[in-house]
Image 1 (cartoon, helix red, strand yellow):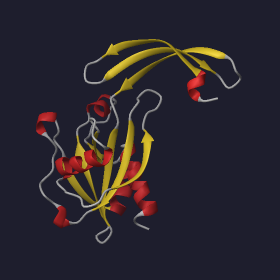
Image 2 (cartoon, rainbow, N blue to C red):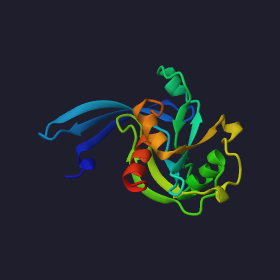
Image 3 (cartoon, one colour):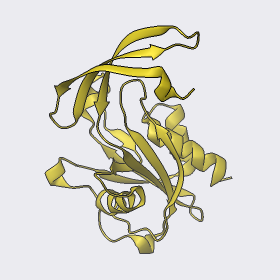
Image 4 (cartoon, rainbow, N blue to C red):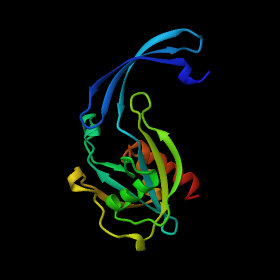
Length: 193
């Protein structure tokens, strides 16, 4: 039996269509014991995205960004977030979108990006799936300062860090962004061995 055989959607109400779509869905779900149970879930659909960790094996460095994130601030985080460059797909292919984000946010035109995995980041409430990429970089690939698009509200600082420093920043709490932690751990396990 597939999951679609275990779900019967009864009602979907749109709660907001401001920037993205927020709905409340009432459905029946067939539990493992065969019993049907009515559940209600709010779902935030913001589309899918892509995220990138540029790395340089020779210099043992990576490139991250630092920027303001209102939801983190609203949850008590009183600092700028250090993150891997990322963006929403907006109907583009994941590789195409992440190449554009690299140029906009960090100022690098990368020769080759490699997808390493996909993951749902908050599957209990948000539909978003991220496509995770890594790419080798060097100074010759720098085409600009980065910083993002001001008309989209981006005010991004580009950080080039030693991989060991970035990993230490996870341990001491300076890096608290999940997608970034995942890519840094991937780099530690598979790239900088």
